[in-house]
Image (cartoon, rainbow, N blue to C red; front, side):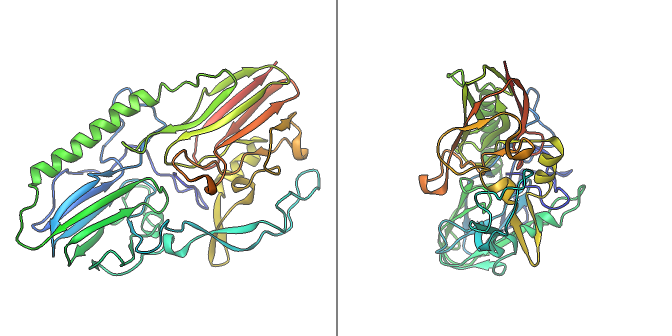
Length: 364
């Protein structure tokens, strides 16, 4: 999820700082890349491509060695300890009374919880060493948010003092996971060359998968895939498949999150409204960062298909709310959204989480 916070922190896809190498650093250290360490998109790859993956996913070191993570994307490096799943958004009171453009309160107005991004996800947790799987350590999102447009986030380093198997994840993308295997001091570990080869091999698998994913096409005629991606390679394309669909009055279109790792929305309405929701999808509220309910919650009570005539809620606003990835448990929330179109017209929509993820429904 390339989340847009406040003034729209945009993180390029397949873009890394100059001089990125694929070798371990100083003696006793290994480098892992959170996101693809490439200077530019490979030839033939969609500009909407991304890679939610740690390169390499698994590293083996000795006790006392240090792992350095280079962050290329909206990611964290999070050792969650007993916090499983690691909290990204947490309830923080109730929503204020909010009315739509027709002066009617939304169904969630004054009832649904305010969703605040957990301080555990935003701020760095713990020190620079880790000694056991119960320890909570995280790079935090501030490392990414405070980086300039031309300067990458500061690397995150952890020294592992005790042998063991340490699992970690990105707090934003739950399916983006890695492991550090720590052997007793003095035991053999993979060479620099083999670690670099593992990165190259994983990148090759991601790119090959992206070439397939960007050709995604639903088999059913009245279906739109909302994004597409595979957790096994981290490959993701933030686009609608198809980007434009023609239907007849009375048809019901089913929007399905086809991504295995990332969340998305399906949001209709005036361009200015959609742009404002996107820009402020997560915005400061006092000392907290909270999710905009116009993006995070469905515009209408959950249930069956919603009828749409281009004038819903007084201005044509219609929203699926957050659609969970295919890999999420059922309790996490819906993964599809059904809309019955009742009036001819051309209706534009987007995902307000991912910039430039746009679609169109033409109703005859």
